[in-house]
Length: 116
Image (tube, rainbow, N blue to C red; front, top):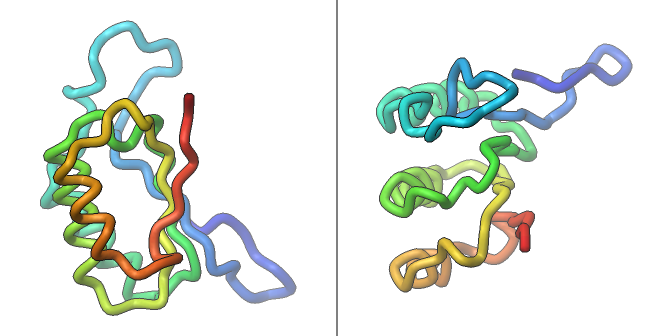
């Protein structure tokens, strides 16, 4: 999970994938590859113990399933760590509930790479 080493010290960046075993050429829906929320939060708990500077969610279009995205965002919002969380998202998939939740997140805590 750690992306590399710099002069004997671990870099403070982690890439996290909320999917498992997804083939490179994908024609079917991704739902069957999504890790259960409980598994995602357990894995994140193990990662956050190490207090990484940034956790990058490499799931393409992280917010394509609103309830799932909200559950993960709520979990991360409750964590007392100095970590920044980075997501690739689609603006067309935003709901009012997502905007309401994000309005409560401290500035700089979440980063977004927005596809158009």
